[in-house]
Amino acid sequence: MTTQDYLQILLFFAVLVGLTPILGNFMFKVFTGKNHLMKPVFGWLEGLTYKFSGIDPEKETTWKSYTFDLLIFNFTGFVFVFLIQLFQSQLPLNPANLPNVSWHSALNTSVSFMTNTNWQGYSGETTLSYFVQMIGLTVQNFVSAATGIAVLLALIRGLARKTIDTIGNFWTDLTRSTLYILLPLSILFAIVLAGQGVVQNFKSYETFHTLEGATQVIPMGPAASQIAIKQLGTNGGGFFNANSAHPFENPTPFSNFLEMLAILLIPAALTFTYGKMVGSVRHGWTIFKAMLILLVLGLSISLYAEYSSNPIFGNLPLMEGKETRFGITNSVLWATSTSAASNGSVIAMHDSLSPLAGMVAMINIMLGEIIFGGVGAGLYGIIIFVILTVFIAGLMVGRTPEYLGKKIQKFEVQMAIIAVLAPNIVILLFAAWASVSSQGLSGLNNSGPHGLSEILYAYASAAGNNGSAFAGLNVNTVFYNLTLGIGMLIGRFGIILPVMAIAGSMARKKVTPSSTGTFHTDNWLFIGLLIAVIVIVGGLTHFPALSLGPVVEHLLMNKGITF
Image (cartoon, rainbow, N blue to C red; front, side):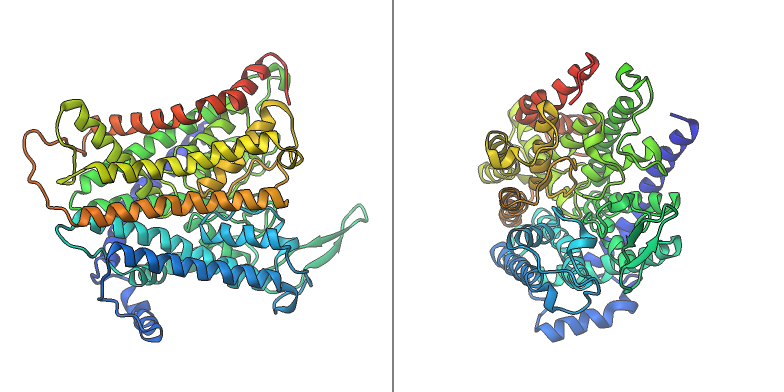
């Protein structure tokens, strides 16, 4: 690594830390109904939305009604995206005359974008029309991210309020998240990206003749507007098949830096928002520090693995599968960020990462997508681990566990365990099924432990609602489209439902005044315990599978054996 590499990494994290309280404080004002910068700009649209849809923004609901509204809204979006893919050829904005999408691919894509996974088993520029990309996928990029924020807000209210049954209004939270946060940031970001050279038009695909005399079709389309929200909403679905490695999506080093920053920006800022809303900014920063430590540890291991000398590769750094414009450091930083933040965008092929770097990307997802994680989803995911940490600490000292002044009891722990187990069961059971079935093995690009890593990563990405892929596995088959789709649903709603139940339960509880025996959740001791619980749970669950995949591959690679 060069001095420039180290400086870029330091600049990246410095900007992220600097913007966290600024954006976090703005979101606090939005979610608490205070005056803010965007109110004069989009306030009229918020009122018009409520009037048009018949919503009373002041009417709050119980956790069950809130969850019902959320499920109905998401199901409606799923059906709409599914149908427009099936009838794509009859719809407008299809200058390439692309045919209808197969039912199983349409089903997988609809589930994928509804759950904020944005997994794609197809090539975007050769499969989906501009209409489907904009009206279907881009809309879901906004509302699926807003749904994650809404669930987090419901949980925050459940933790912050006392002896009350209501936790907010889903429609109000959805509207404000979209209009005041996601939409303004996306508009600004899209303008900047277009200025950097990202494509934004409605032209038909262009045909050119290369210097060698061959014919090449150059895809066009409204890319900048979709790339902005795909990064800010931790979505990650690529407008082009090469995703963010494509020069039309990511043309310059500056656009690359901004797109990486956008992946982590809102999830990081929400920790500050959380701290202010629960009455402890220091606790919000504590959660931020735990996330940042895990991210930096993973990044350090990945950089070490990618820059390590190995005689098999001529003792040279590993450039296979990486975009030469950005190099190794940017590729590893992006891979670590995108897998930590539930964002499926890539600038390098994860299938070509060294075994240890590939394992870090997998572990980031397998831990529950709580190292910043998806917009909203990452924070409510790590709060599940906070509850488990507080519970374990209470058992260690023989005291009833409390969190933010409220007792953590049997029901909350049961729901937290369900939320932790749901995605992990999907990863292990479905990966095992694919590893021994002809349908699962038929899509492999590699044999041995690397082939297992490809399968593990696919189901981890689905269950973690991440969307990135090793790119060495053919998943556009009936088997993978259906099993991965089921995994995405369980990974999303298998966590949301327990979280909402916890929110409802905590809202009804009284607050116990702190005492000398209160276990504090805003110091380095708590950070250490929280990280230990996260790592132990992830390690105990997935270490056997990882040992058969990337760990074995790393050991064999050092012996001169590759796959």
